[in-house]
Length: 545
Image 1 (cartoon, one colour):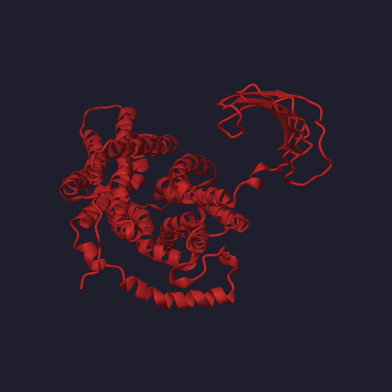
Image 2 (tube, rainbow, N blue to C red):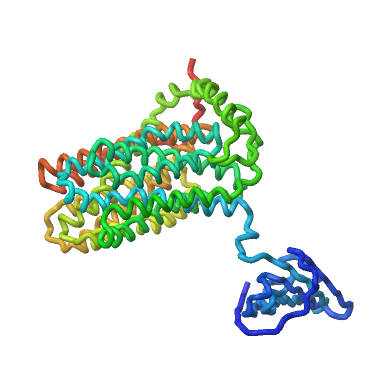
């Protein structure tokens, strides 16, 4: 399609006095094959018109989307859009149609688009609240006199709650519905985030607040997955998943960009109050978004209706009683999962260890890179935060490239297992090589070190086309359970690795030994295990007797 736009001031087109939202008038002439349609997109108060010319291929005698040429002739000041269409056969018809839309334009969006947009926004806020401490920990350590071990303990406490809530989050989403669990998660982590500055001087309460943040964020991915599965048709689901979870990278960027100026101008407390308030506002706004009819079979787990869900803030007594009944049945459901068969599969163990290894490098760098840039490369707080934005930006680019690369290999006939092994090997070996270079005393300037680390961490996103696809490859039926298992183990490095990095830094005073050496070890051993035991061949996990 070739399209050209031009703006102009214009008078009103004649319209029917009827003010219905949608209406159509057609006047057809037997002597021409040009017809005009008037669409009302904006209310009459708008005063600017737009002229749009659109050429679409046409076929003789037809009026389908592929069989006509259109000339869209303008959005008038009264909101009408003039369209002139000509057939390619030389015959002519003339008609006038009018469409009256609503303003603002999102009023006419399908309900599922509003759900996906607001859920993605929740994930933006999610990672803003996750990364804010990695910046705030620098002034907080100076103010409260924390050493690296104490700072590592504070940062790792988030992952205690995150690890504990992975599997429960999936089960709760199946019982109560993703919408309710997502609302609970956002509200929980937002309120806990606002608690941080209030309890920052009392270590046990500070650690507890960060655990609560982790619990709230840990249940949210499963909740969003359930919401997408029940609200979005299959042909739109891949884009919906990408849009929602892409909010995480956007949140990392926004958090790292906004936190430093807020801290410098208003103190470290401001980032926790402002980011927490954003989550509370999201919860209030989400009450105006209706879930709409479910696209599933009509039942939640244990036979409960999948009709539009009540809000977390408006649950009825009957809903609460139903939830209590479902909890007792949950035990039976858990027992039906073939746990023993999972843990007798070498491919599952390869997935578990690979997830652990990848998370070690990811979480330790996410928590400690701003401090590394500040102390080792002598960057100030603003500079350290800005360069910390580069790895998630690189990940966004690499993810789009990796997915196309993997799909093209599979489409060309390469075995799926081979493709997954190639992608995951790139995801492990690239950061291992770049961290090795950074560990050597080569006398490189700071910005070259930043570029090297950014490249390695960006390429680690090939894992999304490697490890993270293998759960669906080997068992679509149990993919969510398998992801819950590997993601639970994958959260352990956030607890152990982040704290251990701080302890090693205190004892060795070496970033190479404390931050890079353990990550390199796990990247290399993870590659060996993955190449030896990983498989994408479908497996039947029948329950063992």
